[in-house]
Image 1: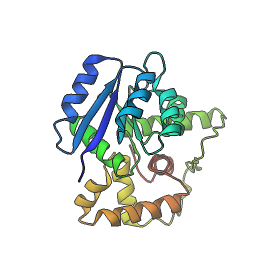
Image 2: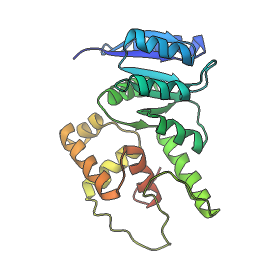
Image 3: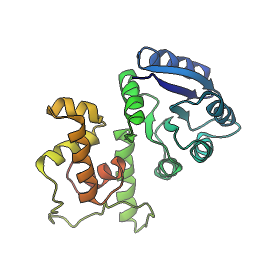
Image 4: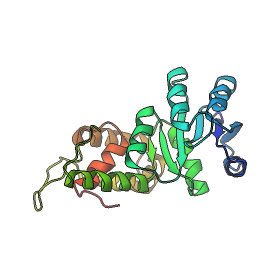
Amino acid sequence: MDRIRVLIADDHPLIRQGLVRVIRLDPLLDVVGEAADGKEVIEKAEQLHPHIIIMDLNMPRMDGLQATRQIKQRFPDIRVIALTVEDSEQRVIEVIRAGVSGYILKDVDPDALASTIKAVYAGEMVIHPRITAMLCREMEQDGERGGNHDQQCSCVSRPPGETLNTGLTPREVQILKYMASGVHNKDIARMLYISEKTVKNHITNIFRKLDVEDRTQAVISAVKLKLVNL
């Protein structure tokens, strides 16, 4: 397997140095460059052709959200992982719409960071469970206030005591719980003694049955429908 080429974008040198040290501990990962602002990360992306960009959202000259939008337009094959502190619901939605493949917090465990990079490289979308839980809380509060989001998601509140027949099998609910905890496909397969391809097939069925398009929407829907707890 070729090493995964990673570009780090953060305006704090100490954070960049820490990320470089952590990522280089994994023999499958290769840090190919660093950038201190949004404009520089676009230039480095063109020069270095990374597979993955770790993108701080709050940077000078051009913030990470704007940089992500431009990178996804110009280099659609590059996958972006947003690295930030916990943010507002609207901000998270904007970042996801910009095309990020991952949304993790700056207090991420080193092993979890490496696993996230590998999962995103493999085509998964990874959102920190705390961010998912925050989205659920905000959307529920907005619903109680009579608000109306345009975010497409089947996480609709239901009257107390009303049951829902999603058609999910016990194994699919089990996998949903792992997804809600931020466990990646490879680790789910290992824990359930099944192949990673089987896990992906289950997740495809989960998306279809919950009428969602990605892992984030699936977890939000499952939490709102009380299929899983965070």
